[in-house]
Amino acid sequence: MATLTLIYGALLIVWGAVFSIGSESFTSWIPAMLGAPILLAGVLSLAVPAKKKIWMHIAVMFGLLAGLGGLRFFAGLGSEAGLFGNAKAASSQLMLLVTGSLYTALCVRSFIAARKADAAPAGD
Image (cartoon, rainbow, N blue to C red; front, side, top):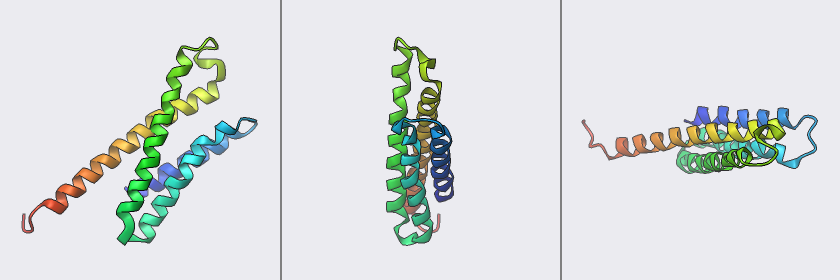
């Protein structure tokens, strides 16, 4: 999961940077602002294996924030401007919803598997 965390953090940073080209909106940087701590947590989980658990929990917290932030996509469906009033914003929101939710789900599954492995009696 640490490698996936590095990839996901980098993806969010690149997405935010690319979508901010030519944009005057500060909010276009939100994916990058969420990606930076995810990337940092991934780096630290690999650099300090003894603290991997805490760094991965921090990363998944930001992944959850990304997924929840992406729920803003649905607000655009009911607006007068319509979903494509700002296609760049809508695509970023949808990307955050999908990738943040998927990343969080994968992390939770990994955490559950790790707990089960830790709880399994030795010799099984």
